[in-house]
Length: 272
Image 1 (cartoon, rainbow, N blue to C red):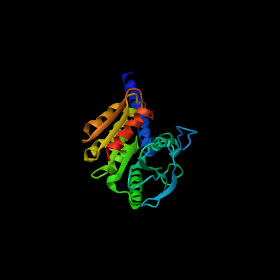
Image 2: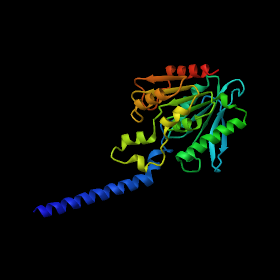
Image 3: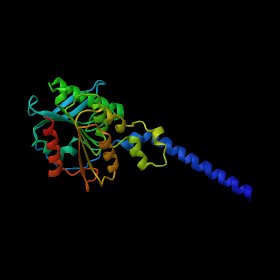
C-alpha cells in the first residue's frame, strides 16, 4: 500500500513538474506578446486639437517610425520627446497631447516598432534604438541637448532612464515608473523564476542614479499595474533636483486634470 502511494506521489510530482516546465517554456517564448500590446485601444474618439506634422524617423536598423511633431519655436522653447507605454497607438495619447498646446514647448511623440502600423517587433534593445533615433532626429533639426525634455510613460520610463544617463538633458519626466521589469513581473508571476527567463529587464532603479538632469516623478497610489511604491522608490533614489506629483486616487492611467497639467507646466517653466 505504501509502495503504491509512493509510486502515485512520484507520478503526480513528475506530471506537475512537466506542466510547470511547459509553462516556463511558453512564458519564455511568448513573453513579449504578454509585455507589448500594440493593438489595445484605451481611448477612442479623441480629436487632436494641437497642430501636428506627421513625420517618419528612420532607425539605424532601417525601421521607419511614425511620429507626430509639433513645432512652436525650436530656439525659444524647450522640446519635449514623449515615449509612450506598452499598449495602444499614438491616438491613445491625444487626450494628453492636447494639453501641451497651452505650454510653451515643442513636442515629438513616436510610436515604437510594431506599434501604430510600424514594422518590426518590440524589444528592450529595439525600443532603446527607437528612442535614440528620435532624439538624433530632433538634434539634426537643431534642437540642442540641453533644451530637450524627455518624457516617459510607464514602459516608456524604461527608455527615458536608459537614454538620460550621463546626458545633459533639460529635464526628465517619469509617469508611473517601475523599478525594473523583473520586479513588476514578479507581482503577476510570483511562482516563476522571472529573473532567469525575462528577456527585457528595463532596470530603471540602476540607471536613475546616473541621471543628473532635473526630474519629475508622477504616480498615483491607486495604481493596479505598477505599484505606487515603485514610483516612490524611483523618486527617493533619484538625484537632486527632483520633484514629485503623487496622488491618492489615480490609477495607472493618471488623470490629466488641472493639477497634473499645472505640475507639468511648473516643472517645464523651472527649466528655463
